[in-house]
Picture 1: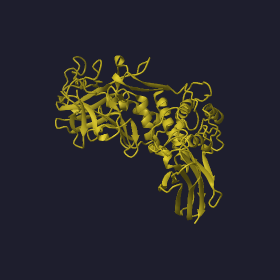
Picture 2: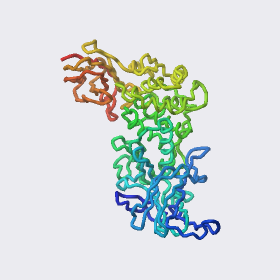
Picture 3: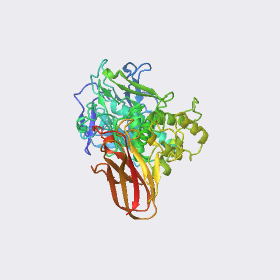
Picture 4: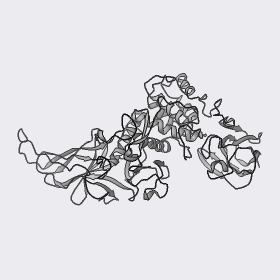
Amino acid sequence: MDLVKIIGAAFIATSLVACGGGGDSATTSTAPTSGSNAGQTVSKVTLSGQITFDQVPHKTSGFGLDYGNIIKAPARGIVVVLMDENNSTLEQTVTDATGNYTFRVDAGRDVKVQARAQLNQPGRWDVKVTDNTLDNALYAMEGSLTSSGTKVSQTRDLHATSGWGGSDYTANRVAAPFAILDPVYDAIQMVRDADAEAEFPAMEYRWSPDNQPIAGNRALGQIGTSGFHKEENAVYLLGDADRDTDEYDPHVILHEWGHYFEHNMARMDSMGGLHSLHEQLDPRLAFSEGFGNGLATIITGDPVYKDSSGRGQGSGFEIDFETLTSSRAGWFNEGSIAAILYDIYDQDADGADRMAAGFAPIYHAMTDTKMRDADIFATIFTFSDALLDQNDINASDYRLLLEGQNITSSDAQGSGERNSGSIASSLPVYKTMNPDGEPVSVCSVDDAGRFNKLGNREFVYFEIPETDQFQINVELSTGDGSHDPDFNLWQDGQVIEKLSSSRVNSEQFSGELSAGTYVAEIYDFYNINGNSDRAGDACFSFTLSRS
């Protein structure tokens, strides 16, 4: 059975690559030879079967995938279509939690079964795995066109094989799209356990064997790295054998699903960009990446985050978020965030972890209006504020978890936080001021790196009591040489003004501001531009006055 792709409304099937070794053919069973149904001819036949796929696990010792212990896994919740000789759909259903499906079909009719790489419950969720190098065509596999016969029942099982030939891939990688959907099925079920009425906006995982770790044209497979693209509501996954593949990396798949969840069902303010586990990051990025890591460990039930890569997918890395310690722990560290989330969830008491609250309070905090509609950014602080409102959360136990990661505030704005990450200007997290009040000093430094690191950007929080004309000035106060201060003006979680002129040592806004709450995000352009040779530390005077 070849891996096929369904293109457009006509459901035209086309092979991924040359035919060969893609899966088991459909099989037919006969009616019983004894008993009440023996030899019976019927007008309707029950056609049923199981859809399965090769699940390639990670090694239990060392890094990488273990092709010697492939598991035959059920394809749960996927769309199965019964089709005729003209590729017209006769019936459609979804598999159950064991991968089984059932149809009722006219006796003696030529039909085939097609299993699609799609989780779908109309009005609730719709997740597809598509090929970004072939116009985002939907992956599927199908059995042969065979008569339904004239007996009581018939069985047609379909199995998607990995295509692994012993030392490399030698056949179509039919199992990959179904392996991608498997952990997503668990994610949906976990959310539904917390909220039976949850609705999931449609999304796609875009995967191809041609998806390479090279940035460029994604339609050609040049995706750079696996990642969620909110403008498309799609996750692109690597599939480049012997370099980096992610279809058998459930933690990676779920990390990116976490970003989908943040963007569509909660709140995501991350600017993205390169980051690593022990860096000091912008708190928005730290929370988003930490949430993705933490959610992946929660849904898999495995605190050891695994990612395979390299020749034969035989290497990679692992991170144990249950035992993780970092010299840079804090509100700006993604590892700290992930460890906190897993400790809220898990049942094990260790170190500062006395919690065993499960996933529900995490879900409800993320979707709480205090988090989702906050007039400040999504960080560990806004999450903490919302979490402490949830049932079954012991405030002292949670604050102990925070302290175990060198986080000293659970206030939404991080008020009273004492861990500066050795960057003095990073505190307070939000500088506050009043219109026509005293200037506020803000800084932009590159001590932890550039673009999305701690200290690159600072935040000023202010409230406008009534609509009026205002002027905002950002002027250099300390710093060597010339600088280029810029700022974004946020209201209700959206950027309403971007002030980014090339004016030396100053930036200005003049115009009407309506009544409400605002956050100004101030930075030196040279500290967020990775190609700049002018990066460095500078401080600015921020003033807000009626004009």
